[in-house]
Length: 115
Length: 117
Image 1 (cartoon, each protein chain N blue to C red):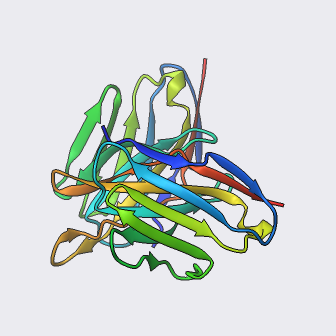
Image 2 (image 1 turned 60 degrees about the vertical axis):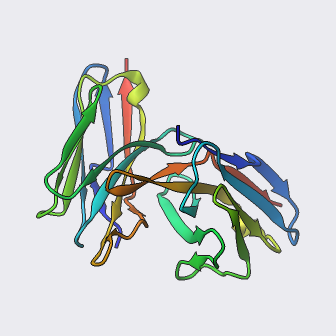
């Protein structure tokens, strides 16, 4: 089942912060975050596994609350290069071997960073 | 690391013809490759899962006789759109899966834009 992303779109000025949420009605093994620019393929940002994991690099970080089946992506001090559509991909668990490897993607959140 | 190439980047073909798209993992061996389709301003819709040496697994609603997938090696998967029609026009993207720590990470190719006239 497709995860729900919110908001659908957000417009920022350079230097502002944003939070993008991803919520699933099903149990999750992992959550993957991608950024896609217009006409290009999605670029892998990070993956979060079960266990209340948090990750980040540069000024982009994410958290995963497995109990709530939710993940959030945090963009701080946004840069022009952060513009694009952000997708979360959720991976359901398989009892015998961890994750199923298949991802179900949300509808995306369009982020626009203006000067 | 984790570079995936896709060829061609774009293709225009006439209705009724077939088109082959190649997906290669350049610097790693992919346990699994995936084929997605994306319509403008929409999400990525999984079409099929491809494993080397075995038949592809298609998602519900995807015609396996129309979208032929061949996974010849751990670094190459091909998607052939047979008897293409205008409604098959779309952005096709492949991804290759690599095991990292405790989970599989998917890395996407640059995509192929197919236009059927």
